[in-house]
Figure: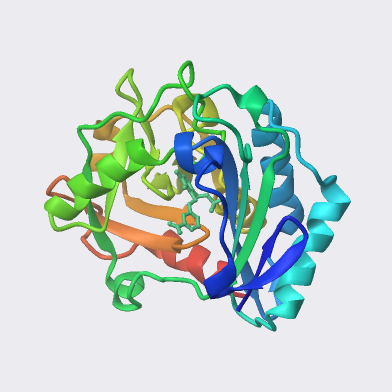
Length: 279
Ligand code: PXG
Protein backbone atom coordinates (compact mmCIF):
# COMPACT_ATOMS: atom_id res chain seq x y z
CA UNK A 1 0.00 0.00 0.00
CA UNK A 2 1.31 3.42 -0.98
CA UNK A 3 -0.01 6.47 0.84
CA UNK A 4 0.22 9.98 -0.56
CA UNK A 5 1.30 12.71 1.84
CA UNK A 6 2.02 16.18 0.46
CA UNK A 7 3.22 14.95 -2.91
CA UNK A 8 5.27 11.95 -1.77
CA UNK A 9 4.34 8.28 -1.47
CA UNK A 10 5.02 6.28 1.69
CA UNK A 11 4.57 2.66 2.69
CA UNK A 12 1.83 2.13 5.27
CA UNK A 13 4.27 1.87 8.21
CA UNK A 14 6.09 5.05 7.19
CA UNK A 15 3.01 7.15 6.44
CA UNK A 16 3.12 9.52 9.41
CA UNK A 17 2.22 13.10 10.18
CA UNK A 18 3.28 15.43 12.98
CA UNK A 19 1.62 15.39 16.41
CA UNK A 20 1.44 19.19 15.93
CA UNK A 21 -0.92 18.80 12.96
CA UNK A 22 -4.11 20.70 13.75
CA UNK A 23 -6.13 17.93 12.13
CA UNK A 24 -5.13 15.79 15.12
CA UNK A 25 -5.04 18.54 17.75
CA UNK A 26 -8.38 20.18 16.91
CA UNK A 27 -10.06 18.18 14.17
CA UNK A 28 -9.28 21.18 11.99
CA UNK A 29 -9.67 19.76 8.52
CA UNK A 30 -11.95 18.18 5.95
CA UNK A 31 -12.16 14.91 4.06
CA UNK A 32 -13.86 12.90 1.35
CA UNK A 33 -14.64 9.19 1.13
CA UNK A 34 -14.74 8.04 -2.49
CA UNK A 35 -15.40 4.68 -4.18
CA UNK A 36 -13.44 2.93 -6.88
CA UNK A 37 -15.58 0.65 -9.07
CA UNK A 38 -14.03 -1.39 -11.90
CA UNK A 39 -10.85 0.65 -11.82
CA UNK A 40 -12.75 3.94 -12.14
CA UNK A 41 -13.13 6.59 -9.46
CA UNK A 42 -16.87 7.11 -8.86
CA UNK A 43 -18.06 10.75 -9.08
CA UNK A 44 -14.59 12.18 -8.47
CA UNK A 45 -15.51 15.66 -9.74
CA UNK A 46 -18.55 15.81 -7.45
CA UNK A 47 -16.43 14.76 -4.46
CA UNK A 48 -13.76 17.34 -5.28
CA UNK A 49 -16.38 20.06 -5.73
CA UNK A 50 -17.74 19.26 -2.28
CA UNK A 51 -14.19 19.22 -0.87
CA UNK A 52 -13.42 22.67 -2.27
CA UNK A 53 -16.70 24.02 -0.88
CA UNK A 54 -15.87 22.59 2.56
CA UNK A 55 -12.42 24.21 2.30
CA UNK A 56 -13.91 27.56 1.36
CA UNK A 57 -16.41 27.46 4.22
CA UNK A 58 -13.64 26.92 6.80
CA UNK A 59 -11.13 29.28 5.10
CA UNK A 60 -8.66 26.50 4.42
CA UNK A 61 -6.49 27.21 1.42
CA UNK A 62 -5.50 24.09 -0.40
CA UNK A 63 -1.95 23.71 -1.72
CA UNK A 64 -3.30 22.05 -4.91
CA UNK A 65 -5.82 23.40 -7.38
CA UNK A 66 -8.76 21.30 -8.58
CA UNK A 67 -6.90 19.70 -11.51
CA UNK A 68 -3.80 18.98 -9.43
CA UNK A 69 -5.93 17.37 -6.71
CA UNK A 70 -7.72 15.27 -9.32
CA UNK A 71 -4.35 14.16 -10.70
CA UNK A 72 -3.00 13.33 -7.23
CA UNK A 73 -6.04 11.14 -6.48
CA UNK A 74 -5.86 9.32 -9.83
CA UNK A 75 -2.11 8.79 -9.45
CA UNK A 76 -2.58 7.31 -5.97
CA UNK A 77 -5.26 4.94 -7.28
CA UNK A 78 -3.00 3.90 -10.18
CA UNK A 79 0.06 3.31 -8.02
CA UNK A 80 -2.02 1.10 -5.70
CA UNK A 81 -3.48 -0.87 -8.65
CA UNK A 82 -6.95 -0.98 -7.12
CA UNK A 83 -9.87 -2.18 -9.26
CA UNK A 84 -12.38 -1.84 -6.44
CA UNK A 85 -11.87 0.01 -3.21
CA UNK A 86 -12.08 3.15 -1.25
CA UNK A 87 -10.22 6.45 -1.31
CA UNK A 88 -9.90 8.58 1.81
CA UNK A 89 -8.80 12.10 0.89
CA UNK A 90 -7.91 14.14 3.97
CA UNK A 91 -6.88 17.77 4.18
CA UNK A 92 -5.84 19.19 7.53
CA UNK A 93 -4.92 22.74 8.49
CA UNK A 94 -1.35 21.43 8.82
CA UNK A 95 1.40 21.74 11.43
CA UNK A 96 1.09 24.61 13.86
CA UNK A 97 1.67 25.48 17.49
CA UNK A 98 -0.32 24.29 20.51
CA UNK A 99 -3.20 26.71 20.40
CA UNK A 100 -6.17 26.74 18.08
CA UNK A 101 -4.99 29.73 16.04
CA UNK A 102 -5.16 28.43 12.46
CA UNK A 103 -2.79 31.21 11.39
CA UNK A 104 0.10 29.25 12.96
CA UNK A 105 -0.43 26.55 10.32
CA UNK A 106 1.46 27.61 7.23
CA UNK A 107 0.66 24.74 4.89
CA UNK A 108 -2.30 22.37 4.73
CA UNK A 109 -1.51 18.64 4.88
CA UNK A 110 -2.88 16.54 2.00
CA UNK A 111 -3.25 12.79 2.59
CA UNK A 112 -4.64 10.23 0.15
CA UNK A 113 -5.20 6.65 1.29
CA UNK A 114 -6.44 3.93 -1.06
CA UNK A 115 -7.73 0.87 0.76
CA UNK A 116 -10.46 -1.76 0.77
CA UNK A 117 -13.94 -0.72 1.77
CA UNK A 118 -15.69 -2.01 4.87
CA UNK A 119 -19.21 -2.95 3.87
CA UNK A 120 -22.25 -3.79 5.91
CA UNK A 121 -22.61 -7.59 5.82
CA UNK A 122 -24.38 -8.67 2.59
CA UNK A 123 -27.41 -10.16 4.37
CA UNK A 124 -28.52 -6.67 5.51
CA UNK A 125 -28.96 -5.54 1.90
CA UNK A 126 -31.44 -8.36 1.43
CA UNK A 127 -33.34 -8.19 4.69
CA UNK A 128 -32.83 -4.54 5.68
CA UNK A 129 -31.60 -3.00 8.93
CA UNK A 130 -33.16 -1.71 12.12
CA UNK A 131 -32.25 1.78 13.24
CA UNK A 132 -33.06 4.00 16.22
CA UNK A 133 -33.36 7.74 16.70
CA UNK A 134 -30.35 9.03 18.64
CA UNK A 135 -30.95 11.34 21.60
CA UNK A 136 -27.90 13.34 20.49
CA UNK A 137 -28.99 16.03 18.01
CA UNK A 138 -27.13 16.82 14.79
CA UNK A 139 -24.94 19.90 15.22
CA UNK A 140 -27.00 22.80 13.94
CA UNK A 141 -26.26 24.74 10.78
CA UNK A 142 -25.47 27.85 12.85
CA UNK A 143 -22.75 25.98 14.80
CA UNK A 144 -21.00 23.78 12.25
CA UNK A 145 -22.97 23.34 9.04
CA UNK A 146 -23.24 19.56 8.40
CA UNK A 147 -22.61 20.28 4.72
CA UNK A 148 -18.98 20.89 5.69
CA UNK A 149 -17.47 17.41 5.61
CA UNK A 150 -15.13 18.15 8.49
CA UNK A 151 -12.88 15.97 10.63
CA UNK A 152 -15.20 16.64 13.60
CA UNK A 153 -17.25 13.43 13.86
CA UNK A 154 -17.75 13.22 17.65
CA UNK A 155 -21.36 14.28 17.29
CA UNK A 156 -21.98 11.40 14.89
CA UNK A 157 -19.83 9.02 16.94
CA UNK A 158 -21.97 9.66 20.03
CA UNK A 159 -25.05 8.78 17.99
CA UNK A 160 -23.31 5.69 16.58
CA UNK A 161 -22.56 4.53 20.14
CA UNK A 162 -26.26 4.90 20.96
CA UNK A 163 -27.10 2.77 17.93
CA UNK A 164 -24.64 0.09 18.99
CA UNK A 165 -25.89 0.13 22.59
CA UNK A 166 -29.36 -0.51 21.19
CA UNK A 167 -28.06 -3.39 19.05
CA UNK A 168 -28.41 -1.44 15.79
CA UNK A 169 -25.96 -0.58 13.02
CA UNK A 170 -27.12 3.00 12.47
CA UNK A 171 -28.97 5.83 14.19
CA UNK A 172 -30.98 8.64 12.66
CA UNK A 173 -30.22 12.09 14.02
CA UNK A 174 -32.67 14.97 14.38
CA UNK A 175 -31.69 18.62 14.11
CA UNK A 176 -32.20 21.00 16.99
CA UNK A 177 -35.75 21.82 15.80
CA UNK A 178 -36.65 18.13 15.89
CA UNK A 179 -36.66 17.52 12.15
CA UNK A 180 -34.82 14.57 10.66
CA UNK A 181 -31.29 15.43 9.51
CA UNK A 182 -29.40 12.27 8.52
CA UNK A 183 -27.77 9.16 9.95
CA UNK A 184 -24.26 9.05 11.43
CA UNK A 185 -22.60 8.23 8.10
CA UNK A 186 -25.47 8.10 5.62
CA UNK A 187 -28.32 10.19 4.25
CA UNK A 188 -31.87 8.97 4.83
CA UNK A 189 -34.78 8.66 2.37
CA UNK A 190 -38.38 7.63 2.79
CA UNK A 191 -40.86 6.56 0.15
CA UNK A 192 -44.42 7.86 0.61
CA UNK A 193 -47.08 7.32 -2.05
CA UNK A 194 -44.38 6.50 -4.66
CA UNK A 195 -42.53 9.75 -3.93
CA UNK A 196 -38.98 9.89 -2.52
CA UNK A 197 -38.39 12.37 0.28
CA UNK A 198 -35.10 13.27 1.95
CA UNK A 199 -33.98 16.10 4.25
CA UNK A 200 -32.18 19.08 2.72
CA UNK A 201 -28.85 20.64 3.64
CA UNK A 202 -30.58 23.29 5.72
CA UNK A 203 -32.30 20.48 7.65
CA UNK A 204 -28.79 19.32 8.63
CA UNK A 205 -27.98 16.73 5.96
CA UNK A 206 -24.67 16.36 4.19
CA UNK A 207 -24.99 17.06 0.46
CA UNK A 208 -24.39 13.37 -0.17
CA UNK A 209 -22.96 12.20 -3.48
CA UNK A 210 -24.90 8.93 -3.19
CA UNK A 211 -28.05 10.87 -2.25
CA UNK A 212 -27.68 12.99 -5.39
CA UNK A 213 -27.06 9.86 -7.47
CA UNK A 214 -30.27 8.32 -6.11
CA UNK A 215 -32.22 11.51 -6.90
CA UNK A 216 -30.89 11.29 -10.46
CA UNK A 217 -31.78 7.58 -10.80
CA UNK A 218 -35.26 8.36 -9.44
CA UNK A 219 -35.68 10.95 -12.20
CA UNK A 220 -34.62 8.40 -14.81
CA UNK A 221 -37.17 5.94 -13.42
CA UNK A 222 -39.91 8.58 -13.56
CA UNK A 223 -40.24 8.78 -9.78
CA UNK A 224 -40.79 12.03 -7.94
CA UNK A 225 -37.96 12.88 -5.54
CA UNK A 226 -37.94 15.95 -3.34
CA UNK A 227 -36.06 17.42 -0.44
CA UNK A 228 -38.40 17.94 2.46
CA UNK A 229 -38.45 18.59 6.21
CA UNK A 230 -39.36 15.27 7.84
CA UNK A 231 -40.38 14.36 11.37
CA UNK A 232 -40.17 11.05 13.21
CA UNK A 233 -43.87 10.59 12.39
CA UNK A 234 -43.00 10.73 8.67
CA UNK A 235 -40.37 8.03 9.18
CA UNK A 236 -42.64 5.78 11.24
CA UNK A 237 -45.51 5.99 8.74
CA UNK A 238 -43.38 5.73 5.57
CA UNK A 239 -44.06 3.02 2.98
CA UNK A 240 -40.32 2.40 2.62
CA UNK A 241 -37.07 3.74 4.04
CA UNK A 242 -33.43 3.41 3.00
CA UNK A 243 -30.05 4.96 3.69
CA UNK A 244 -27.47 6.15 1.16
CA UNK A 245 -23.73 6.68 1.46
CA UNK A 246 -20.42 5.93 -0.18
CA UNK A 247 -19.80 3.14 2.31
CA UNK A 248 -23.35 1.80 2.56
CA UNK A 249 -24.43 2.47 -1.07
CA UNK A 250 -28.21 1.93 -0.70
CA UNK A 251 -29.35 -0.06 2.32
CA UNK A 252 -33.00 -0.76 3.18
CA UNK A 253 -34.39 0.12 6.64
CA UNK A 254 -37.19 -2.06 7.97
CA UNK A 255 -37.60 -0.88 11.56
CA UNK A 256 -37.20 2.52 13.25
CA UNK A 257 -37.51 2.80 17.04
CA UNK A 258 -39.49 -0.45 17.11
CA UNK A 259 -41.96 0.67 14.41
CA UNK A 260 -42.07 -1.71 11.45
CA UNK A 261 -41.61 0.16 8.17
CA UNK A 262 -44.02 -0.96 5.44
CA UNK A 263 -44.40 -4.75 5.62
CA UNK A 264 -41.06 -5.22 7.40
CA UNK A 265 -39.21 -6.15 4.21
CA UNK A 266 -37.18 -3.97 1.81
CA UNK A 267 -39.64 -2.04 -0.38
CA UNK A 268 -40.15 -2.46 -4.13
CA UNK A 269 -38.91 1.05 -4.98
CA UNK A 270 -35.88 0.59 -2.74
CA UNK A 271 -35.05 -2.67 -4.54
CA UNK A 272 -35.48 -1.00 -7.92
CA UNK A 273 -33.11 1.81 -6.93
CA UNK A 274 -30.53 -0.71 -5.65
CA UNK A 275 -30.72 -2.58 -8.98
CA UNK A 276 -30.17 0.57 -10.99
CA UNK A 277 -27.40 1.78 -8.70
CA UNK A 278 -25.55 -1.52 -9.16
CA UNK A 279 -25.53 -1.26 -12.95
N1 PXG B 1 -23.83 11.91 6.03
C1 PXG B 1 -22.68 11.80 6.72
C2 PXG B 1 -22.59 12.38 8.07
C3 PXG B 1 -21.59 11.13 6.13
O1 PXG B 1 -20.44 11.02 6.80
C4 PXG B 1 -22.97 10.69 4.18
C5 PXG B 1 -23.98 11.38 4.80
C6 PXG B 1 -23.17 10.14 2.79
O2 PXG B 1 -22.50 10.95 1.83
P1 PXG B 1 -21.89 10.36 0.48
O3 PXG B 1 -21.33 11.54 -0.23
O4 PXG B 1 -20.84 9.35 0.86
O5 PXG B 1 -23.02 9.73 -0.25
C7 PXG B 1 -21.73 10.57 4.84
C8 PXG B 1 -20.57 9.86 4.19
C9 PXG B 1 -16.85 5.65 6.68
C10 PXG B 1 -17.47 6.39 5.57
O6 PXG B 1 -15.72 5.18 6.51
C11 PXG B 1 -18.43 7.37 5.83
C12 PXG B 1 -19.00 8.07 4.78
C13 PXG B 1 -18.61 7.80 3.49
C14 PXG B 1 -17.65 6.85 3.25
C15 PXG B 1 -17.08 6.12 4.29
O7 PXG B 1 -17.47 5.53 7.75
N2 PXG B 1 -19.91 9.01 5.10
